[in-house]
Amino acid sequence: MSRHFYGTELTSPLMLGTAQYPSPEILGDAVRAAQPGVVTVSLRRESAGERAGQAFWSLIKDLGVPVLPNTAGCHTVKEAVTTAHMAREVFGTDWVKLEVIGELDTLQPDVFGLVEAARILSDDGFKVFPYTTEDLVVAERLLAAGCEVLMPWGAPIGSGKGLNNIFGLRALRAHFPDVPLVVDAGIGVPSHATQALELGYDAVLINTAVAKAGDPAIMAEAFRLAVQAGALARKADPMEERDMAVPSTPLIGKAMLA
Amino acid sequence: MKIVVNDEVQDVSATTLATLLDELGYGGARVATALNGDFVPVAQRIQAPLHEGVKVEIVAPMQGG
Image (cartoon, rainbow over all chains, first blue to last red; front, side, top):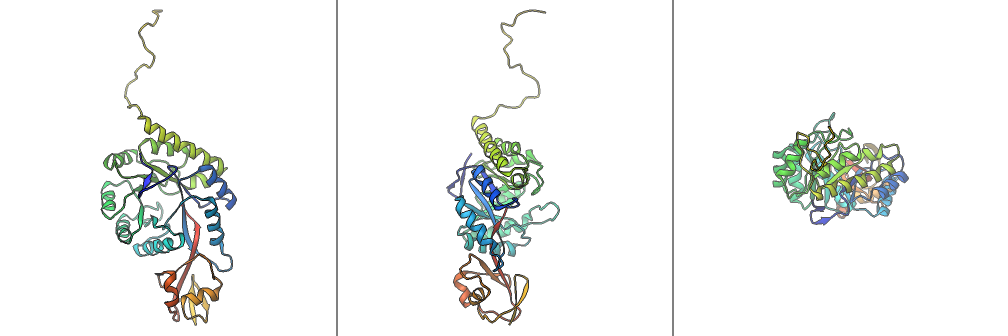
């Protein structure tokens, strides 16, 4: 397991989204409780009068956590590439979580557009974190396009369904043992995050599961502990599953009472 | 001159993107800009002319997942 992404070591395998919190104060509390390695951020139209973005940026700067800008909501290669350029300038980082959405009901990535945008941005010096599926062939293409990290979905964004295709995620991990892998999207509860880390994933990206919890700060702490547990379990090398029972208590020396 | 700023029609006197930001009150704000869908870096705003009907996008940091 590695927490190195494009040569940078993150302090935690938890990546936390900053959207949908009940208030900026609660967002701040959640970030402090989660102690994430990065927080994800975005760009939206700014009104000169309200300057909401300036207040948000001030809050994020004060939290002192590295940012990973996204291209959320982009449906075309051009939109995503232009948004990435704007984000690089505004946030002062060449990291970008690249989303090219292909389908509205599932928010499934348009993997064809994703590969094309990833190549354009990688060639332009961006460090691309592509939001993709668990498809091995797409993963190969993304790596060939210059990506050094892959972010397969666990389940559709905001669904909270957890890891829908454990076989596929495990295959991806086995196929690319040296590529940093992050489960992005679909995680609903801390046990899902633990499971991803136990599978050997290097990080998880969570947003809705924390923001939409009844108490986001407590849930953020639960996720902080969950990823620690998962990472430790992976390090400890879990036992192999068996189909049949094997007694854990030794039978030798058992009293004959029947 | 009428232009479209963040999807709203505005009547402005600015002739470049840089002066437009001042005119609309964005002075000093951390924003990124695009003209007709093409990114315009900060350093190029002063040389980015505005034309009747041009579409300007002005974006800033926002919450994201």
